[in-house]
Amino acid sequence: MFTPVQAIGRLTIGYVRNLGRMGWFILYSLYMIVRSPGSPVYILKQMRFIGTKSLFVIVLTAAFTGMVLGLQGYYTLAKFGSEGMLGTAVALSLIRELGPVLSALMVTGRAGSAITAEIGIMRISEQIDALETMALDPFKYLVTPKFVAAMISMPLLCAIFDVVGIYGGWLVGVKLLGVNPGAYFYEMEKSVMWRDVYSGMVKSFSFGVIIAWIGCYKGYFSGPGAEGVSRATTESVVLTSVIILVWDYFLTSILL
Image (cartoon, rainbow, N blue to C red; front, side):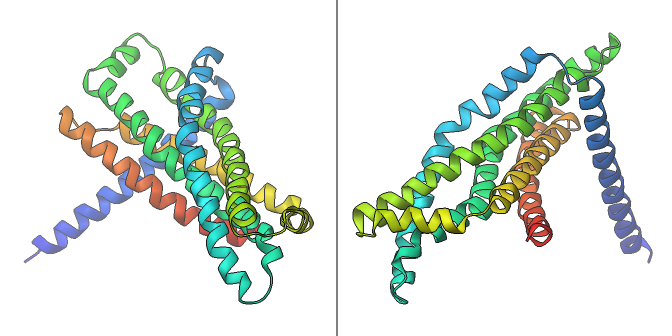
């Protein structure tokens, strides 16, 4: 008679335990960043992996996102005779929302999954246990360089996404649909404020923390065997994407 209640209790305790472990993980990671962020060589290596190697997918996604915004925005604004506001619509959409969110989702799929798989393989092959046996903190060598690299790389990737997306909208709006190029950039310059850029950078910075946090956590506590690593990688991508979207809503409500 108590079996369903016991099952619910076990699930609840398991979720609470995981939440506590995740909270401890990020707090200790941030503490280690302040205390000992790791070798600059490791950080640069991770910046190359997270940032430089993500450039292609970021540029490609940004170009077509801006082109779609230019196309859809033009036909929407044309109904009100406001085609000259196309630059404002494209720029604000990218800088405030689409740039940080889409760049974070692309990096999650490309780099976040790889981070989880890398640390997960080190866990099941007992390399992390070997570091602990030699009295070396695994966080210093495996976790904090990824945190620092993600926090630096994500705002830069977001800035590149915004610029490429704006010029993608310019390509469609000005070159294809005939919007006045002066109006495109003038209205954009008049409407985009520092607060818009600041909010986008804050979002991308926090998304970098989330990507490194979930990716490293899932890999560090992955299950045994290849199946455990594959499950951890899938959970990492899904959970990171969901948290990014939820956190974006709360940040938007705060930064407006």
